[in-house]
Image (cartoon, rainbow, N blue to C red; front, side, top):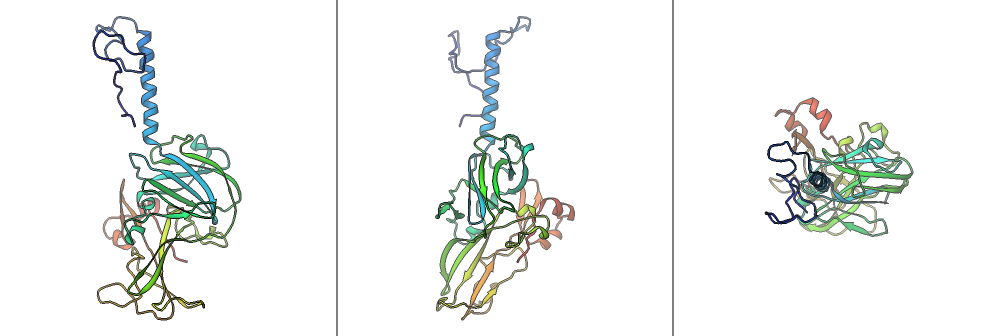
Length: 329
């Protein structure tokens, strides 16, 4: 990528006639005394240079290669992050092709902690989100890719755009559509299998429908967080008995946490000094994740229990305007 913010002359310094390629004249637009009329040729080069800088700025501040598809009850948006990584990505939707953000409504935002799968990596630093690919298979995100899982509440074609926080540029690289949506059952997606203390386990993720009110849930898929959590993934782990799950239905136990805890912290074996529960012989243990992402300052966040931060300077007002709350169903 070219350096943004300055243009370097494409010709050697000295009396040699400059190459007609874009360059920035710095001394000969006006005479040294400032009394000579504008050199029109140089003015044209200045304008070309400014356009190049502007185009370079768009290139630097717009993510690349947004694409989307519908699968397993949700619309999947995937894009490539570009430097500088923003505080958030903002996601927009419209019934028309998006050429300006004024034509669309914002439906969510994702933090680096979301799309970099920081919670999933508690299980394995090499993991990244695995999602359906729209043609019956799966797709695992690359390290420089981000994802947003939109839960539609209506059918028909929709257009989407994703912009970096602080940017409003929309173009072919960060808009997509139409994507035809349906109302179908939302699925969970397998992320990893393994074994811990003799218990086989599977890690799943589901991308939640986050809205200001739980009363706006779809009949088949409840709202599981506020609007700041919309479209983000939550992991959970399902343990089987050491002897295996078998073919019959079996009871399941839900390992609830006190807020801000991890799906990776609970196992079905009692061990001193660890937040574990009693040994499980004849059922399943479901261990959900419980992240609470709190804005401490602009660009500074903490994955802490809500009550912990309230006692250390987090105010009710910024909780209402910038933070996330999750509900379990």
